Image 1: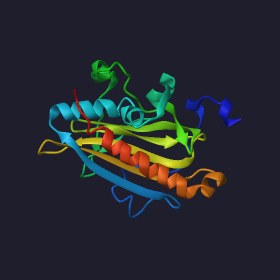
Image 2: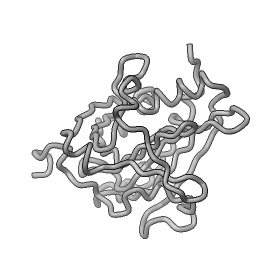
Image 3: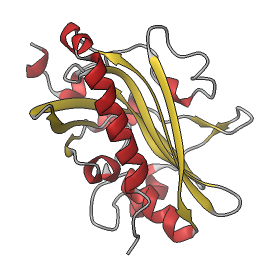
Length: 219
């Protein structure tokens, strides 16, 4: 059974891996999926950017929003060879991510949490209508640029939805710091289709929490 297979060996449950990078996702989402893009200003300055990006890269957005997150790291053969982060600038030119050798001193957040890497898998547990619900995800790419940090994860079999979601912290030229959440999704099984209305409502609630938690104090 799928539940007996380690998370790192399980495939994601959708085909358009990396689709949340598309700038035209609202107009051209993967067929059958509902797209969403939300963006909010979360502060200003270097300290805010460093704080917000560190929280983002250590599952802080999810944890501060009420999820219990359990990370199952993949073997090095997976993280080093299978999930290679590729990002692009506004002109479509590939941007080379920092190498592990260059980033060794930054692989932990200030509170000691490990920064996530492509290939990491995690289970996120919360309550849906007072019932515990577990959502399993795989980090499918990481954005590691001087003024943009974040990641995208895809759904695994143990998730109410099928699709992808990304969390990108960006510092603009005027020093403003922004969080952008992009996703495309649909219910993963027939019984979640039956609960489609409540499922969408729950997704909207958590998205609002995601956008709000990084606006807190950096102290």
